[in-house]
Length: 160
Image 1 (cartoon, rainbow, N blue to C red):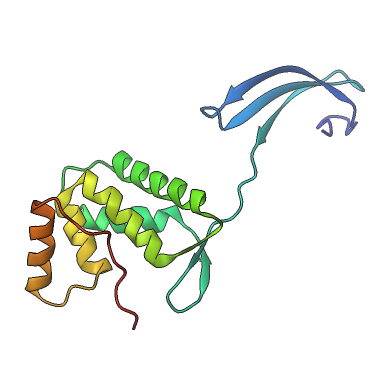
Image 2: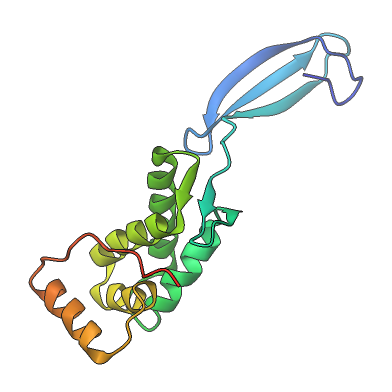
């Protein structure tokens, strides 16, 4: 590590401890050239998560899009912002376990799974957009399945 004061590459680690809830390691270093102490942080480099759209286009995963979608579905519902952020974080974590590329249909299915456990009204609202409900019967079928606690694994909307 290059010293910020004298740019020497010789240093020693004086202290190491966990930071950011165990996501990083904070290291106190001392430059062997000038004696100045400085702090560095070490983190795991995450591979970019890519979402493959139905059209075949690829775009970087953005947690903010998940939060915006579930926030719209949960509008005027007793669901706090921190719970929506947590849901989006859980979705991202699940997707990362599946690999570096994931389909947009899979993203929607995982959001539906998490949203169903969080708030059933928000779930139905999100499902109406995700599954492309065309008439009131679609809502009725979804609510009946939800009431029977017998929802199938969410299927992606039909390709356009």
